[in-house]
Amino acid sequence: MIPAGIIPPVLTPLTPDREIDCDAFRRLLDRLIDGGVDGLFVAGTAGLGSILTDAQHEQLVRLAVEHVAGRLPVLAGVLEPSTARTVERIRRIEALGPSAVVVVAPYYLRAQSETQLLRHFEVIRNHTALPIAVYNLPGCVGAKIPVQVLCELAKRGWIGACKDSSGNDAYFTELCRRGAEHGLRVYQGLRPDFAKLAELGAAGCVPVPANLRPEQYAEAWRQCDDPVAQPRLQASCDALWRELVLSTDFFSRTLKRLAEEGLGTGVMPEPF
Image (cartoon, rainbow, N blue to C red; front, side, top):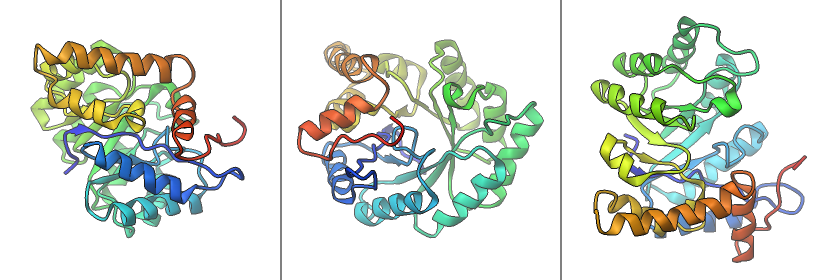
């Protein structure tokens, strides 16, 4: 099962020649585990999952699974634009032993109906025994997945979790409330409002700044319903969010800060 709590979208440090920095990646995994997070999401958007080559993607998942060695669940992003490519990428990594896969709706040529979306996820479900989480990412995919589709997927037992990065509070609230009826675990993908997460019964969050300060986010999650501690912890997480995300894109500043602290080079992939 995909755990509740803080599941950072693990960044992928690169060497100066833009290959995976294996040593820095392993040290980042240890930093996150030692910081008290609950799971690890590798090859997500911030982890460059949509632009890694097939060989790099396999290398990254293998590195994560082998190094983590069961200490935490490892979720592997499979951010492919089509059903066939998603199935093929899952086939390549399934034997490596990730705990779950995180998939997106078709993009570039997008699904035009709920029927097509359901078929996309049905085919994926039929080709893997791994737990599946759906990543609702309209900013990159081009369209949001309707709440009723996600609830139907959960109702049919095809998925167990959803990461929502829509930034739409009304959508997230509806997804949490309706999804709960079908056992769907919902995770906040953008700035986490910990009091709101507790109120809605959300399963957790997937915050990029947790790469830099995992212990801060782990504490905020564990005390999200504490009326005394929560405002202080929320304020500290918000300050980090403003510095690392709002001041730039969603991950380059965090990579640079990690490099300043001796982890990785801060190099971005081409053409960034």
